[in-house]
Image (cartoon, rainbow, N blue to C red):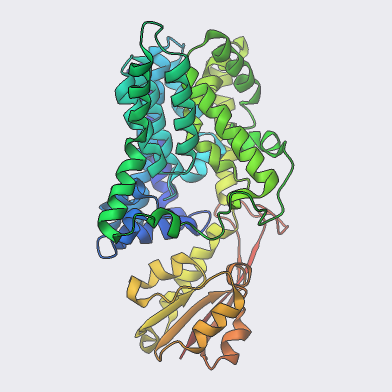
Length: 464
């Protein structure tokens, strides 16, 4: 069994390493921003305590980020493999047959496959989550609660997992424990947020830093965008679980519920699922309905799928297993390769490589994609941060100092910041170059503009 486990881990390490270099940037520019925050946190300590940059993630990633973007993505790859290994371990602890299959059943979840070689926060959350599950299963409840308390330092979903864990400690614990003992156990869940608050006080001197630093587009009870239907996360289950794993997942989820094992993990999965479904409907906290949110609890998805897998006799045949897993891999590869945004990094690299030498001497940089900043090696003092308000952005550009460089695209720039290339020309910026691109996938090229089709993009460089 151990040899099969190591073969799976080695295979996915090679796959992940290939993805790191085939796709220099992530599926959305948040990945690049998380890298930038981690890279410059030592010179800009506010990034260590910022709500958006996520304190524990930034702290752990701040060391590999000093080496470079690819190294930081490889760090996520190692975290993802550690998550797969821990998922295998808990499957073995539970006595689930073919426990080594937990590795591909985790990493071949399309949403997880998309992230396991990037720099987003969900894989680290998933690792801490599965570690907490194992500690709890082995009756190390205080240690498990301590790990759970750290989740809020990685992603907001940690709050809801803490609520689930607290309810379990209070109402589903050992009947011989007094209420005082239970309350003390619940108090451990506050270690993470208390530590965060203390750090904000030391760094900023502001006891209300977390309130004042709260992102403006994360509004809890005001609809800031048009949401989707409540059943949205049911519709995208093929991206969360994998299209070839759905029957196994449903059956396994029922098995886990009936067996009353991993109770805290199961209810954490359901809580995150329901919370995101509600927030997406209402448009709260800027919830965009991304499948990747459920990567946070992907170990539960993999364990349920594995349990259900063993219920289907046909899937226990080696040839059938190989065919299904190969098909699942191809779906995942298409999911990654078909993301239009991932292709923009190739255009950014090409433009950056052809810039005239004099254009690199900027004192301020305005960029529409975080990878542009990464590619040009700009530091926080160079950034001229744009906002979502067009009028505010125009004012910032008018007052920008000489030697300000603009690196802009025709998609993200207008959508995020309300600015097109024509706006810069009207503000006195000199055009250095403009390039148009038709970008296809590394492996797939389809004749439409949706996922997997051609990416029509323009890149512009201006100088003042």
